[in-house]
Image (cartoon, rainbow, N blue to C red; front, side):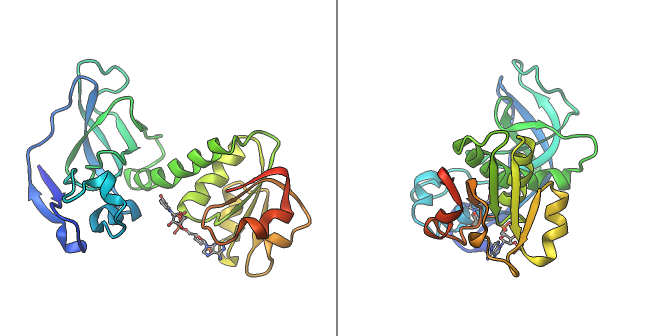
Length: 237
Ligand SMILES: NC(=O)c1ccc[n+]([C@@H]2O[C@H](COP(=O)([O-])OP(=O)(O)OC[C@H]3O[C@@H](n4cnc5c(N)ncnc54)[C@H](OP(=O)(O)O)[C@@H]3O)[C@@H](O)[C@H]2O)c1
């Protein structure tokens, strides 16, 4: 099968188009024919290993996994003998930051891992890029134990993480105040935000309201500046 592989860390030209053997799913795995993937920050970080710490995960001297690509959407081609949650033909999407492998014609994935079916009204190209930002947003929302009825402020509400956070927090039944640029006010409203602050016109840290959680998804503020708008015992992320 065709795959984009890299065998050493470096600039973008270390990745090359190659022909390699098609993977075979183990008993608990599925084989996915990849229709869409992304080249995201994590791929670039694992490709360049610019930050040395990456090598503790990716391989100290050479990359362990030769194929990048952690976000994917595609169709199940085959399933292992113990898999009964998916069947050939299912349209699926998911996220794999352990083994990567989505920059290839086919990828195997544990059926219990981060993979599920695509809603009928969503295309492969729309599904693949949803996964990483939403994964980080959900981890943070769970860590802060955000619940129904809380008052939450999200800064960077139009980013990959922030736009997912707005929708997930709203879905939990909390009240969302989202902060973004003027041009994105309507977009953020359409994601379900109860109130939108345009940071070009207003400094959210000067609001008179107080919040259970201030989730700064882009790290443009600080705990010190946000403390006055946090409730007693409130969380700054
Ligand atoms: N996405 C991931 O999976 C991932 C993984 C690891 C780390 N990170 C880190 O997490 C942070 C957020 O990532 P992301 O992927 O969500 O970012 P992103 O998709 O690049 O979006 C960043 C957002 O920040 C907003 N922004 C820029 N300046 C701002 C300001 N002064 N105040 C408020 N908002 C501002 C922009 O929205 P406006 O146009 O509305 O200003 C933009 O939509 C980044 O630091 C990134 O490096 C992300």
